[in-house]
Length: 482
Image 1 (tube, rainbow, N blue to C red):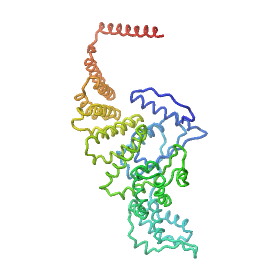
Image 2 (image 1 turned 180 degrees about the vertical axis):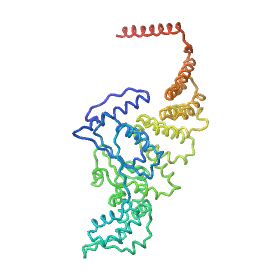
Image 3 (image 1 turned 120 degrees about the horizontal axis):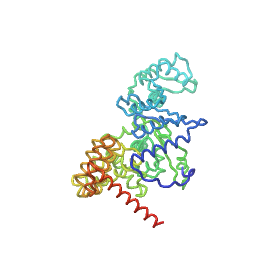
Image 4 (image 1 turned 60 degrees about the vertical axis):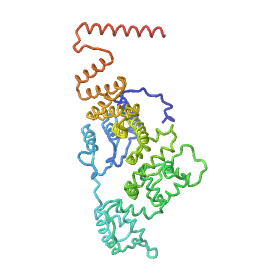
């Protein structure tokens, strides 16, 4: 965006709630740029059942913004993975309360008539011919659209369904299809399809699945311990089979053997369907998955320059955390705790407070019993940040839990002050104003500042005069500087 708006100044540092409000305001303003009567904006968000709390809050904010009237958001989710306690349903209810119109479109499985129509348009034959096949497909797939497509592809690949060129028509063997021992699980079907690929392609797909539904070639090359060109070559078979899709034409620079691709050129891919990613991941034996994730995390860490590590911190930490049970040395645990602290700070900076809290909590769990003596700065930082993130998530029981540890273990009063501030904010958030004042007075007393619990007129007058004198002193000093 700097190409359009120019280099921007560093924004002032604010308290977390203020920073979150600023982030929301700026994001709303950005979306408003694109939501005009002459060019409304349509956003499509898939797999909302996996959305984190911060994303759902942002979605809620955009849809309840009275000044944004030309935004149309389409969201898709699997209702069988969303129960009544799921945060998505709560967010939708809040959006509805904000007078935003919400329409639900339920996509049911394909019925027999729809599958008949699909086969008619595919095979260009009579209804009487496709009826038995359609009934069999419905029985085998329960009408799952993705499963129907993959089932037909598997029949074609196994030559049970084929095009007879001499007759110019499609033929299939119903008895063979009926007798075939086919799984009723989409992931197992896709896993079987992947297993027909070469060993190298299977391996690269498994590593890709560990990275995520979308991945970069450079990252995949690092975790494969091969060159980008060789990694792409191993992935090519999956691309030709339609299992993996390039996100742009940038991959052609690899295939054309361009000696020096443009600087910063990203070659990215995604799995054609999340079920394909799950199928590829399922091929990794369960007992080996932690080892694979740990190795991927270590390779990413070792091959990322320190100055670029912050940009890859989530990729690195997420992988290492999945292999956390394999870490035996306390020095390695301390290193991962430090990385979780960095990841938590970055998540908090983007208002993803629940994610931040999770990182801080993992970091705390990695500390040794005597970490307050051996890793004081790291331990203090993790506990303070965990206390703050818990407050921002309104998990007040966790605020008390982590704050109490700091107040008992911290070496100096100044190290405890930040936690006292959070406790005061937490009291205010719960409308416990008297407790907030009592805590503040207790901290000030520790700092050598005393306030009477029940100030009289003399106390108020003295306080007013001292404040006025202090302000006058600042003013004269400012004039002298000028």
